[in-house]
Amino acid sequence: DLAIWKPDPVTKEFTVVSLHPGVTREQVQATCGWVVRFAEALDETPAPTELELTTLRDLQARTKAAHEGTAKGKAA
Image 1: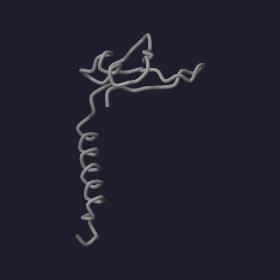
Image 2: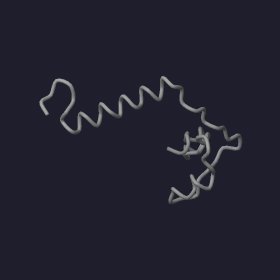
Image 3: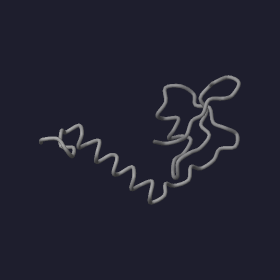
């Protein structure tokens, strides 16, 4: 929820390559139990588009309904 991580091509160590808007290195580090490696050229993750937000919200609602047994086509 805070950043995008990618494995280093040589060492395979996960490295933070992009921070989500408003997130700091310190916040990422505080959530981990190890020393976090950050890319030298650290990017900022683009904010999601309206379509992406709508899609994610719909998926979240359908997932919640499925777990509650209220999905379309199922008896409540």
